[in-house]
Image: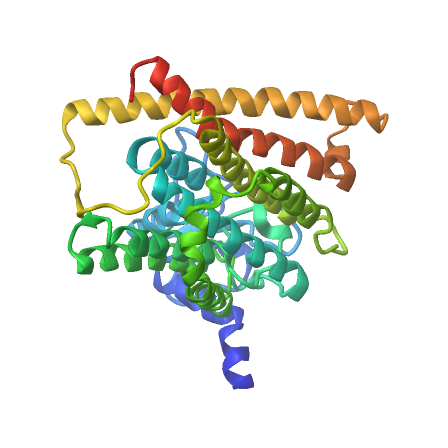
Length: 390
């Protein structure tokens, strides 16, 4: 068993997967890879310049112990896995989840958000407790920079993709009419592509990815009996808003401490705050009867409506209006909260490093993204009604 774990954590396994998919390190950065022809020595690609004849060469800013340049010899895998990696990024979830709420089914978005928040929090905390490093470069080629400071185990991309795809499948199979096999295939393909993209981009070992998938599967199995409780949170006790704000904030403020700064605490605060905002917004809708309640159970399965031109245009209009309002709220609340905190702690406004301080980072991100969650679930639907988009 120990031997199996060591082999699954081996960076060379990730490197072999990358080479099989046509991703090679630049020759001057390490030993010449077998089967990779050596391109002319040149700097990073610039607009209008001619690249090396045997592949596409990329580069990024130099960082310690990181493969700086790489050569792509299979464009299909390169763009497939880069796109798949984006499906596990925050930008996907901050667009997909609101889109689901505004255009598909608020009932589904409520479940997706709660399960996503739970899975991501456990994954983020596990990273800073285990402190397992990411694959070594070289031999691995790393294609992303932002998450390099984070630890590797488990892969939260794999966790989020598995949680979203299978929660969506489980929640819709008894609500909408569609072939179960088709839904299962889509869930498997989506989560598999995101998982493989973490190997291709050199961000995780095989064990990181498998660990993330297994943790998520376990969490879904454990929490599934409590999913009806999630559906009724919006109509819970008047004490709910206090719990929804206080508990997530304390979890963020007492996040496991790392030896060096990593963005995991900030990301975790963003996720928990967004979940708190969504839950609080749904409670506000119920308490003040602002928005019609999404049906929890239907007398018959719904048919998925055809994508007509009018439906697509209405969906795009609702999404555009909602996203603009959310971004505006995010900008205003973030700016105001930072000004208040900088003034309170007597910090220079332009000091970007001060944002990383615990007493500043957690409050400003929590207030900002709680406001975003409330806006997305309460004020955006009201605006849709005013504009006649419902």
